[in-house]
Image (cartoon, one colour):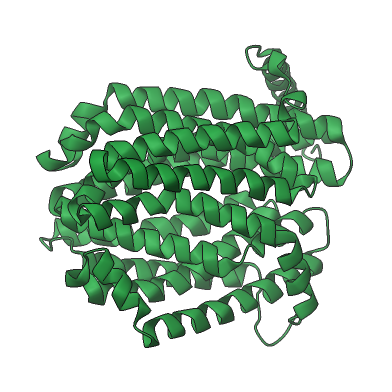
Length: 455
């Protein structure tokens, strides 16, 4: 009965998460692509994407990888223990982030970066983006804490406000005749993230001056555990950001805009499918590992691999079949130049999705140095190929570099983890267990209709 209850919980969370991502896809991401693609030039969209890359890379760098320890230690432990870890690590992250930003701005280093990227006409907006970076760092860590507590529906709810509210505001402004601009976009994003933070803090009963106290020893433990993952996560983020910087340096923000628009569509398809399965399965995989029930851990790992393959593959295939009319509908005609990049980007994204089961297996076994090594080598291959290919081939060179680096990284992760021994490949093309689970769930639902006390 306990196993069936767990299956029902997973199915519910998976259904809710798919529903959440579908709503987010239809009402925000798709709408956002239309609003920005139709109203921003490739150069403006490129500047926006460079801001997003600065924010994303900054969050990974300033987060120091402490969240990995919180995510690993929270499942299966007391609420107070998890809240104490969260409070200690997030306080340290925000303090460190504030100090680093202050130094970067006061020394003029940020201004030099903007000059190298050829985005000085948007300098004021890039400074405003630093405030958004601090907000996003805090909001993301709250979401990770909820995720570690298996409160996936709540995490989705607050994530929806963070990612969706500003798009609604931007769309409402457009409907009444106000043209979407980069300034308006940033202001609405800052408002949305602040609102989601307030709601989330109330939900977890977070209090600055009471409750669990800040413990620097927790920070040290988190840093020792998370540093290899910090390096690997940073390398992973560099892989998804450095191409924008190199494109802008060697070519222009307009080339960044064309490349980023195509890449964004591919990532949107992945976020709706494979990323959902990974986010739902990992807390259960971690819990079974922590409880030393390795057979069930491997089962969750198998299903993570299986549905990442089928869901991501199907979504990307559908995207490629409809890519030309979709680009024509969503954006100005200049963006159609990104069409040849999409098959290469899609294949690289699929390989990236399939690497996650092995990546998480190494994390659970505390083999974080192997994760770091795999991702560092993948990053090295990627950065080297970007500098080699982008000057001559622009966005296509960046797409090829990402494909090769994800292939190298995935092969290393599975080789070092021996992940193929834990994935039951016999279950990839059979659906007997899914059918049995569905029949059990239907039987249990029918049986419990007349018994309200049934789980």
